[in-house]
Length: 111
Length: 117
Image (tube, rainbow over all chains, first blue to last red; front, top):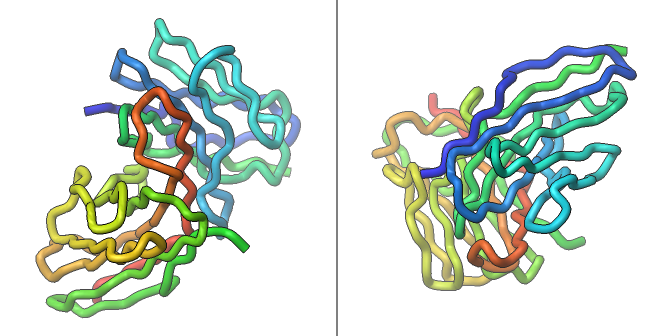
């Protein structure tokens, strides 16, 4: 079964700081990769996804993620965070039909 | 508006009682899913359904049951056999339950928080 690891449980940073959230998965075959975000009181929503092609994927709200196949990683980045980026972020890996989620990283951005 | 609705938002249950969580979608999606979210554990798949009248167990199906009589509806019953039912339950849907060669994003509902008293 697929295992998805998110390296940080809770990240606290100031506005304008850069953000990088790590995600590693265990399966070495063909996978589809996702980052979902859950803002306080809101639905879980898709931030970005990778299926094929350019390993650098751009998503909404200035986020991007890089797929490094040799490292089984799909790290999420944002050069300059805002207070509104405070949320919980989930990495997910789709193998065949199944979507496996990491435990999530809570990001708190201080004004 | 297109989307996924879940009801109720909060639900309280006494031990030993069965309870049913509602999930409805008007996205015309074939596939639907139920997840359980616990703090520090991410989302875990309970059941999924590819098409009407068909559903399959996920990773943690014990103590749960589902039905899929209509395309737009996928109710989840938490039975008294579920040993630790207090959790946040999320329903999702996608266009179809496809293999790795297709791009298939899951869309999530607002969730139901179940508390067993």
